[in-house]
Amino acid sequence: MQLLKEKKLLTELDRFLESVARAYKNRAIAEPIKIIEKACQLYFKKQGRLFLVQFERFRYRFKESISDEEIRRILQQIHPHIEKGLKVKLITNLGIVMAKAVRHSFDGFGFAKMDVSFALDNLRAVGFLERHAAVLIADDINETTKRTIAKIVTKGAAEGQSYDKVAREIKSRFNQFAVGKPQLHIQSRAHLVAITENRMAYEAGNMEAAQFVKKQGLTMEKAWMDSGDALVSDGCLENSGAGWIGIDEAFPSGDDMSPRFPGCYSDDTEVYTEKGWQKIKDTSVGDIIYSLNPKTLELEKTIAINTIKYPVEKLVNFKNKRLDLLVTGNHRMFLQTDYDRKRKKEIYQFREASELIGKKSDRFFAGLNWIGKDKKEIKIGNYKIPIRTYCKFMGFYLSEGNVTKQVHGITWNIKISQSKEKHPEIFKAIEKTVRKMPGKWWIGKEAIYTSDNGLCEYVRQFKKSSEKFIPEDIKDLPADKIKIFLDAYCMGDGHKRKVREFNGSMCTPEISYFTSSKRMADDLGELILKIGRRPTFYTKKTKDILQHHKNGDYISNYDNIIVREVNTLHHNLKSMDIKFIEYSGYVYCIELDKNHVMLVRRNGKILWCGNCRCDILYRRKGAAYE
View (cartoon, rainbow, N blue to C red):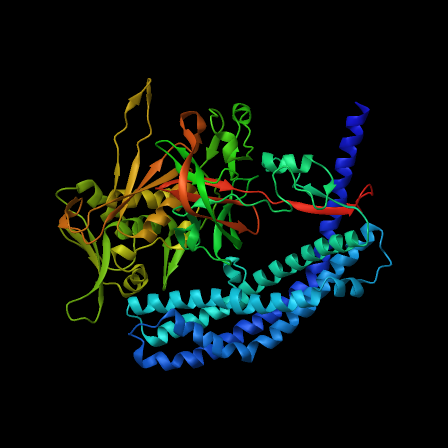
């Protein structure tokens, strides 16, 4: 008993000292982060100005194809004129951070009087930083810039945008690289680069200091330190449980250092971002990812700070009617145990995927705690519209409405289609709503109209049916207001399955929403999560096929995306087939700057998944960690 108490005390002491070390690291990198961020801001602003000067050559051939290679050549041409300032700041300040890490490590190793500059020279730190800075700027930073600008140019040309409009978008994006979008709490790429590189330099200094001391003839040890909470996988717990081991030994997992070889997803898995669902293999560093706070289960925006890709030959498949996921065996699955469920405790933890094979208890989470920001009214031009009326109107417009130029092509006209004879209740609901809206409305037998300039100008942003989306004003509202929008949308372009009885109780009706717009489908799914339900997605092949709709029969120009509202917020392992299957190809993952729980989707089925982060500590053998 006494031995166990002493062991526990030593573990807690290590955790305390490790937290002190983290605090020291945060102080050590605080000022260099500011300096490098400022240098990156200047770099992106200069890069943007020079790029637009060179981009001018495409003004008169903009409608033709502009290749990625041409954009890369522009970046390469301006690179020598702007790289020096950033490169010097990187080498100087990252060197300072490495020196602080080495100094702190030497103090802990009992080498307080060791000359840090001498050690850094022996560690070839200067050469390392020069090479690293060159690769970072030329390959990582500029390659990300190239991909981003290429997307803007390709999209602009495809949509028939003018050269001037695309140039303005490019200018705006370079400004976002430098300063972000503070009003949306989105950090800049400059800030991201500064944080990532300073952390890298500090950890590199720690590791190299330990290796340097080893070369002086001392035996060095290392320990795996997890986060110390419930959100730690069994593999990390096993590694941390190994205690102090030799610096060249492998941990029980087979890893030499943290992070462990990361758990990843199959290449057809999607992740939810600020731009909607996108393939995880297409995600880049700096993308804004929607994550889940594992303690509050609330939605938070995070930044992708790293991307991972490697080949595998088998994956774990979680499959039933509600889920179809493929992940590596060591992937961290975010789950609630049956023990916590029965105690009605909203506590979640990580378990590695391979550990769940054959397991018939516990469950994954696919819901969300949402509060939102309430409003009394919304302003459209000079109009102030009550929020409930606005939500209903937008539900009807986005499901059944369109805006077109009138015959003479001078003014615009809003039309909300619906048959007064075939669907009198829906028609009456739309009529009642527009009566509360500003402007003059005309009530027909098959549609309701207005040519009010203010309203027409506002709804033009939502474009045609295949491009429609839900405004942020609605997505940010509390659940009760969002439900008003969804109910109106469902009346126009949705379906409620009739309530049926099961085991003596009346079931909640299953609701489906229809759209031809991918962006609209993504937004509908987000709103379903925010009202306390779970969305599933299915694409029905309807292009060029005669379809029956509430507002008439016609041949569809697009496939129909069906978003279903499901009541259950969990995937129970009890009904799931979990096994290894053969897989040939690459797997992908991203690392987030916080939370490490993200919303993923495969074959239209969603859940929250995550991974944990750990640190490595170094010390002389037998010495207390300081």
